[in-house]
Amino acid sequence: MTVIWERPQERPFEAQADRPYILLNAAMTLDGKIATQSGDSKISSEEDLVRLHHLRADVDAVVVGIETILADDPQLMVYRVKGRNPDRVILDSAARTPTEAKVLSAKAGRTIIAVTESAPKTRVDDLLRAGAEVIVAGSGDRVDLRLLMNRLSGKGIRRILVEGGGNVNWGLLELGLVDEIRVAVAPVIVGGREAVTLVEGKGFDKVHDGIKLALQRIEQYGEDLVLTYRPAKEKDEE
Ligand SMILES: NC(=O)c1ccc[n+]([C@@H]2O[C@H](COP(=O)([O-])OP(=O)(O)OC[C@H]3O[C@@H](n4cnc5c(N)ncnc54)[C@H](OP(=O)(O)O)[C@@H]3O)[C@@H](O)[C@H]2O)c1
Image (cartoon, rainbow, N blue to C red; front, top):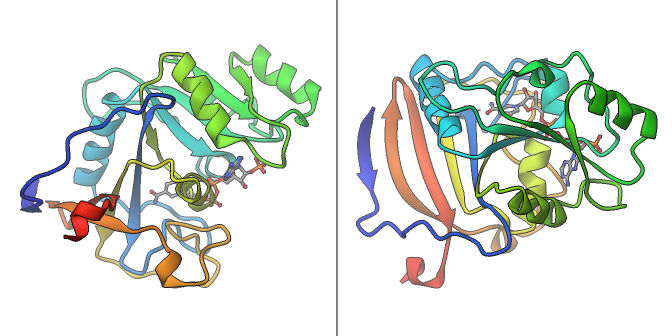
């Protein structure tokens, strides 16, 4: 790893009172995709995967959306480096996580499925039998992210790593719940209108209304550039 640039006075880590610190990490092609149109998401270099596993070992929980579980069936464990396995949290309003998903067979740490009140009880029971913990977060169409984060705080979770996908990224960013973003930019372009981008969702109409960020660091891992951002504060713009 090479540090290419660092903000002279990086802001210190600021813990939140009512929710965990939330770090969003992703690997992205130069054209902003986190998977190809057919769902291939193997974008990171080996060096970047090692960086990701260090990040996992450094947090209390990893959060992903149900579509990422269905597309990639990830284990979300730490195995490329030595370290503690974090809990795994899946945003899954309707309790669609397959009972044979690898994330449920992980031996260390808890697997927590966040659902809404409308999730079918039979599916919730299946997931409980498969060893998951279930948190009911809200009665709306989707998991109430503020409520969930508050509940996760209550379970002793202080630091969270969000590993996507694009809809989950939007859900958290839209609510101002992201404290830090790290994006590995791989030197490849895949195109495709249907390919999932770093941030999906409804989006903003005006650039002016977008979420303003302040660059903190530029590093190189293999051929990937890793950019670290924090939400901008007025003093960053001075
Ligand atoms: N390159 C990378 O770093 C990387 C990392 C992760 C994923 N990926 C790729 O990203 C793709 C999946 O991304 P995606 O955007 O389609 O799906 P996603 O973000 O993984 O999952 C979205 C789903 O999460 C559920 N959800 C529940 N509550 C939510 C809330 N409050 N806000 C947002 N979502 C909520 C919704 O399904 P329900 O309504 O059923 O609950 C929603 O459709 C896959 O191809 C995967 O390979 C790439």
